[in-house]
Amino acid sequence: MDEENQLIFKNLQRQVEIILLYLSSKAEYKSLVSKVSHDLASPLGYLKFSSEILQSQIGSNSQEDLIETGRVISSSTIKLSEEANQLVTEGKSTLHLTELTKTSLRELLSSSLDLLKLDEKSINLKGKLSAKAVNFPELYQYLLFSLINELRKIEFQLNSIEVIPCRKDLKITLSGDLSQPIDDSKIDIIMNDLKQQPFINSVLEVLQAETSYTNTLKQISVEVVLSRAMS
Image (cartoon, rainbow, N blue to C red; front, side, top):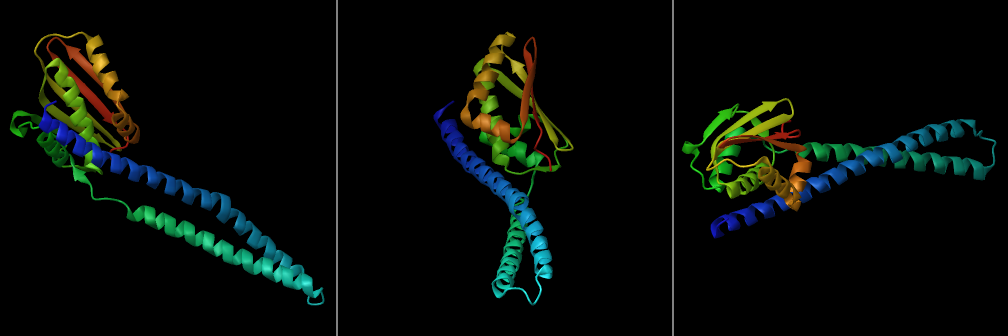
């Protein structure tokens, strides 16, 4: 990778780092909202119901301390229950409002090729390119950038990219030529080395991605299936 590409890669990596941190924080917040709903809001609802029963069973001729205790329990439970429910409602609203504008597959591929300094006119782009399918295009750019740069180690010449969206899945197939035939073992090493890179591993986990390839003489196709790309 030349110096210019290294700078581009580092800038992209910083963006990916911020996105991964955001997604991790969002997941933790979602878990907190769920925990509050399950571990606090529900029990408080039952406690509120029980305190109402207790209040109804305390007569006006009961001891003053008992009446006051029942009142405090009831009012405190109602207040806590309302605050817990409000927290859950606001938490769900906040998570809903963080949805981002989606990027079309054509925009994604064009920007990725631009980062790689590849002429879009020389690459055959295929598939449902008009689909507005993905959030955080930087994750996909980073994955494609890393994958193609790794394949360049075996003198891989990219010819086409095909994208096939299906429900929540997105299949991206990179096809190209090799300068000479290569053993599958060398490709396996490249693919495994790629997955060992910390950021790539995190991106693959976030997108629930699986990679595979087909090696035929001087041609190779690499398929990436992303299970959490579409929404």
